[in-house]
Each structure stands twice: as C-alpha cells, then as structure tokens.
Image (tube, rainbow, N blue to C red; front, side, top):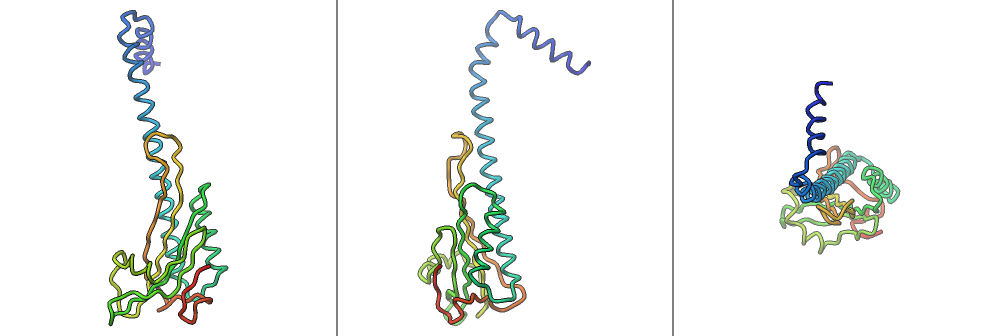
Length: 193
C-alpha cells in the first residue's frame, strides 16, 4: 500500500542508523510522552466523573421539583439508589436533600426539612445560614430544593489529578406545587436520619 511505504522506509532508516542521536532523543522523550499521556488520561477521567456527578445531581433535583406528593424515607432512600446507579462509582456517594423557604419580610431562608444519606449530615439552620450566600434570589414564601452530592474520586494514575472529593451544589425551584413536604417533618421540625 502506498500510504505505509513512507512510514516503512522511515522506520527502516531509523533501525539502520548508527549515529545514535535518535536513540538518545527517544530515551529522553518517551518517558515524558508517557507521563503526558497518563496525566491527560487521569485528568479527563476526573472530568468525566465530575460530569457524571453533576448530571446525576441535576436528575435528582429535577425529579424532586416535579414531585407533587409528600415524600418519605423510602423515597429518599430510592433517590440515593438512583445516585449510586447514575454515578457508577466504586465509592459510596453522599447526598443531602434540603428544602428551604424564603422569608421575604426578614430576608432570610428558613430550613423546612433536610435528609441525608451515605454518611452525609443533614443540614441544620446554622448550616443553612452559612450557605445562604450560595442560594439564589427567591420570592417571599417560595421553597427551594437544595441537592448536595459528593463522591470520592480515585485517580487511575498518580499523574495528573490527585485523589479528590467531587462536590456538587444544586438549587432547584418547585415546578407544579408550592411546597415539597417530608412525612417526618410535617410539623415544621427538621431532623436527621
């Protein structure tokens, strides 16, 4: 074949060459090239996992925003199973789902309820006050769903990205109803599970 002929002749000249310059350059270049290839693979694997995680968090937020019924612990457990399925990671994903209400008269957010799975702690009012700068503007009395996910990502190689925790913070508005209630927190008290 005509296409491979120039490549074959170049490899043949390299094999017969006695000057030694190409061999030394190859010895110096190949480790750097291998390092760069492994670093790029590690970096893009981390980017791939981050994209999977953020899409999973958006899916969970979208599912919750469309919910018209009261949710319970089985529903939250099911959401955690969905997160495990979507992330396809060997590590256990952590998640926290919180519903907050904006109080327009005080310009504050109040915690309605919060549930966490996978070793994550449920959000408290003090924790909500610490993250209120990350919450978007809302109308008085409206509720927002805050979905937080995190997963430990182990880099496939020591080159490129190191092992790290990939965190996502997503805020979604309710679509069809004015509030999303949890059966364990119907009296307005927050709790953990």
